[in-house]
Length: 116
Length: 111
Image (tube, rainbow over all chains, first blue to last red):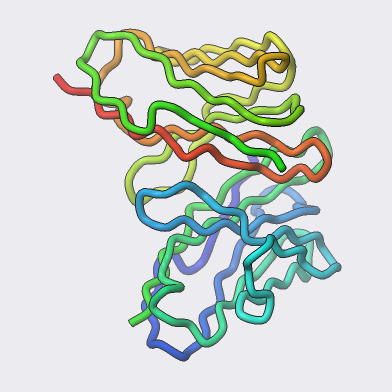
């Protein structure tokens, strides 16, 4: 149980275009989803927290207009990187929590974004 | 602000040796997680430690939590090459359920 998927697993896009990444909880309802970014050989940095049906809460320093997060249902959250630039190239990982038994987060497999 | 410090950052050890990775955190929390990450992959959950004095073991790995000292350890016993990976601890914020990650320990087990 507690499986989280992400799509796509990798994407290459040109500078200035937008990219959407999907995060799905496959076998549970996720009241909260989290988006992380990881640069090579670095740790995971939380970008934002989203609760179903409400606006995402962004961490300090994360541009909310650039990284659009939508948590439209209890099984789906999307991250859209708008007007991507090479410095946005990173490994994006989502996690989901049901908040029922505990707030343990279950991590997706990640999406590698390369902006050329 | 919750801060999590992990050490060492890099650990090269021989097979069959024992070693410990340390995770210190700065404010009160009762939930600490250990994860493994292989190159190019996402996180694999290893241990969930939910209370003071918690100790969990799986194979050659054992994790413990001392909430009073704000310290967790991940002990490796008789290391094998398959344990080579990056290990992260993460502490859950008491107020918001956010996870704050340590910097990670890159473990290389040499024959």
